[in-house]
View 1 (cartoon, one colour):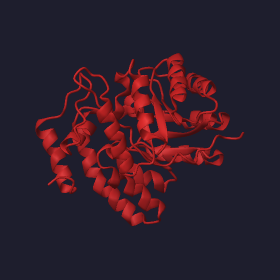
View 2 (tube, helix red, strand yellow; view 1 turned 90 degrees about the vertical axis):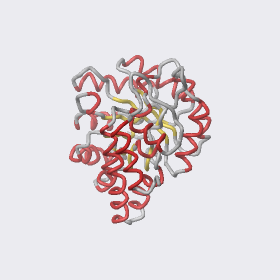
View 3 (cartoon, helix red, strand yellow; view 1 turned 120 degrees about the vertical axis):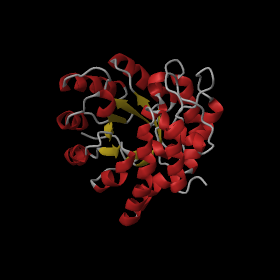
Length: 301
């Protein structure tokens, strides 16, 4: 089997936030500004409509938002189109539209709410891959949000069967599982990106290609330095950068998901607006703890 190239699957890729206006429409000016901010911060790609991009809130504006991002990126870094629909047919529709609009790859989350058997999941991902055979596709394993994990057997079968399934994001936080995804599929050039900002260094130590990291939305230079120092052979520097990031990331867990990323952006005067309702911006002690961590990290005075 001749795989599509996975060379571009590497580095730090933020699941870019989706700024919205008072009518909960995508704010084009702020979105374009956010794209430039993270690219200027050194990121290696952009994931449109990731979990922290509030993909589950976006329906009729899917095409508009993706078109804005692709236009603003202007080929500077790869754009991954995130897909998280439950229904296979809808995922195929979104994948085809993403390719049509110019996405470099698609990233597909396992269906939420359901708890499918491996054979059902295999059929789901296989159908999407077959619908876009010339486009690289990543699997997205997020058991914390879907309540089940992709099995090693499933990922191995998909990686070894479909030339365009070239990698995955693993947000399990289980380093053994991440390592097994890497070990069992490295023979076909399958790339694994970490999905936990606190484990970027750890994922790379086990052979990971980088990470999808939401903190790169607001402190991209620090997050990118974990990757860049590691590939340069400065393992101690990479680990120290990871240690500097962790307290900032861990405080986000005190906010309601996925509010923390926009909270941090706004604390840094990035003016990205509010989350989609029913979520609300953090306030009180939670916001104060976030502010304190930014101060401790040297990002706020």
